[in-house]
Image 1 (cartoon, rainbow, N blue to C red):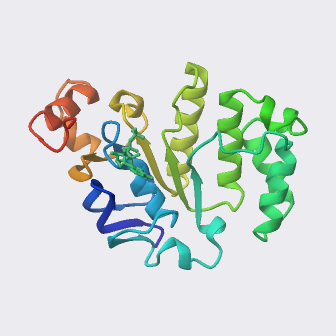
Image 2 (image 1 turned 90 degrees about the vertical axis):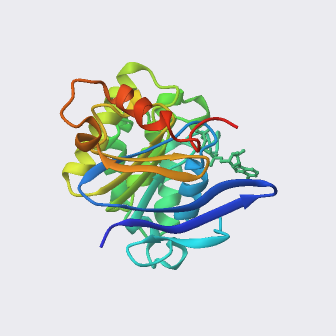
Image 3 (image 1 turned 30 degrees about the vertical axis):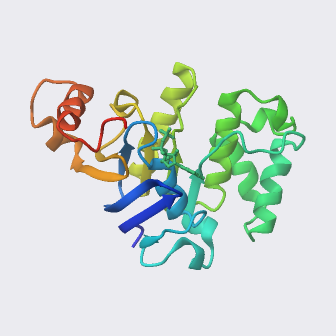
Length: 241
Ligand SMILES: Nc1ncnc2c1ncn2[C@@H]1O[C@H](COP(=O)(O)OP(=O)(O)OP(=O)(O)O)[C@@H](O)[C@H]1O
């Protein structure tokens, strides 16, 4: 199964408990928003799902395995973590060719994903001269190289202009409609309105809600953001230290 599962996940950095016993499952075929204020533990959780950080306790699984034991990780999981993490001197197409080659992925995928994210026309330009929106598109192209059924995006619309935000929303919805598992983090609920079907809300490393958007709104004529504030108002975990 192409689920993402966190079971009792826990991570401390010195005296800070970044993730404090998180349990939730992300299902395929829908966009799951991963929401919480700055410092809530979203990035730490995503890094543990991707095997970039080891949990102190609990487990993060893709299907029934930890990321690090997946045989063809890029064919199983695609991720956009930090779009700035690109070699500035490398041309966009070369960056993707290198990734494809080093992961045993077919070379023809490079042009396919460049087309998909709208970068075919600038494929020979160096990533260092790219705008934030272009770097974000290149990061998404890299995530899609292995055509993976599971996708993670950490704050993908941060700093993007309205056109870029709209583009990413459409893309995420399209991935879910294709049956993929899509987890997208944001510290602003409004960014996930019209995008997420389901929400995992955390505060201070703990789960506050794991709910469908429909259940959260409960047929009321309130905005998603208002419903979210109601939900988090009572949760002491949610508020800043
Ligand atoms: N490598 C690290 N070393 C020390 N502390 C860390 C480290 N990574 C995260 N933290 C701390 O863990 C907590 C959770 O951080 P994290 O980045 O996971 O939150 P977040 O929900 O992704 O926040 P944001 O919305 O700001 O990205 C914070 O208090 C942060 O300072």
